Image (tube, rainbow, N blue to C red):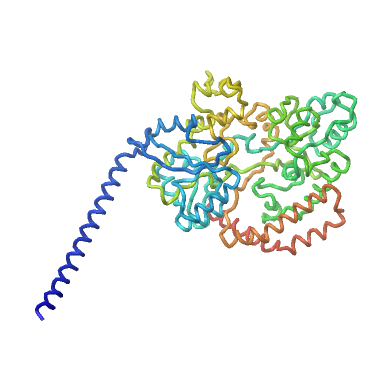
Length: 541
């Protein structure tokens, strides 16, 4: 009996000792965590450079298309010196990037952050809601003064990156709203030499444009004795439609919403592709196509074929970012906004400043979220934008007395024989990816930054839509419907408008087309759009 009592007593003592040990261990663990937190705080500078006193290391995933390996890029090497933040770049080919990124996020094997991978709104909603991507609202307020200033001055951008749950899970790619040329993107260009040869004025209306194309195709303005002139050149019809629907009073909220805008008479949402004005636009384009005034292989032409023809100066008009950079031709001039048959003169091919919401996101594995936010915010300011797009002064660019900047011969006339684009990709990473940051006219040297492009933009700057919508953010349930019913509607419209333009479908079939769009599920489509628009308006209050 004594032995049994002793055993019970010993067991009780052991339990008490275990509890005390656990408490002691837990206390020690918390003390250790606190000590670690204190060390991190002491190492972190909330302002200025370096961001941290002692070097820290972060792992980012990025696409390899802009440059094959970002671990040895001039811009980031320089920035590491400035910040004491060492980025280990994990490169993934852009081919299959979306699939690989989603596998990482779903499987739990993901980095500290995703840079330039182009996370979708659905990714942000899904993985933000799961806690994999961290909310950034407070971090932006405290540690991202450059981005915060942009968001305060452009509330539409803030609304565009705010998900339905009220959280911001990403840093966006932004176009400076004052940079008209980049906001317009693909512009309509007129061959100035053809105009002179034909003794014609620049087109101001759709009728003028038709007459010009007809004269250019039929009267040999290049003087080579061949009927080789091409009227309007484009690749596919999306840019043509985005451009010409403004001449029929459609597309008054920008290209981010190609199918929906606001009816100015009722102030209600309007589905563009079933409007009478849309039919008139397609009839106008059909007239151009049927008379051989639009490139014949509009729907099959390859970009390299377009560039070859453009290099030969065969286009009377072309829709592109810049004939100067794309074709090496300097005779093209930007077109005026063409007035339509009812007096409409709207430059509808105009983008929202918010280009891509999911350009950069921080995961819950990141032990240095404050430092990461500070690291990225620099690229939303003037100095950071200059570093990102121009590189390092004295190496890749020089600054002129008037404050303007230009690339050195390391980029423009590379001593190793690299092309302009190859040289840029060797020292910088902005080409061809959805990077986080802001594109400013002063530092962006792509096609839209050329003087000819900026001059072209001046012609339509006063014809821009008064309000430009950023992309709306749909809930998971709404996205499922938009990816099924919505996709079916949009696919049918894409197919039908091509047939109307090329004449494969008669306009006698228009009513049947409209009925089919409605039958597929237009009411449901517009109901979801209305709900998303309502949330967008609520965020402004």
